[in-house]
Length: 147
Image (tube, rainbow, N blue to C red; front, side, top):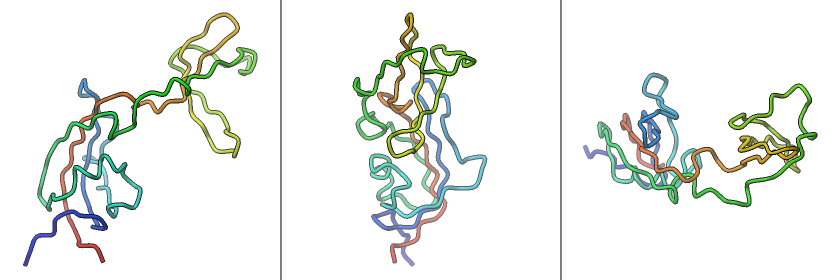
């Protein structure tokens, strides 16, 4: 019996943790139900998936994921200035506050208030993990060959 290696289309059950450079855990399944997915199904970013190729059940590894393979670099065009009067009067508009807007298609678009200057508010619509090198810890529980 051969041990299945992770490859495109493999069905994988694993625990994972994503950590910031300071060690803070952003997301983890280690204390929850394991993640289950098929390689290439879009559940993981391709830059994360490529580190899994060749791993087998029982492997427990950590990888440094550079921004280019994770959530990308921040895009200056994703910083938008808005009028303070566009926000609800009772909203405590302050740097660090996460706000949600509707995009042109009506989908939720989260942003973080970057700064407030006079009557203008700068909102950062970049992914919160953009520009960060992340540690991706994985423990492979089960690998099934692609059908």
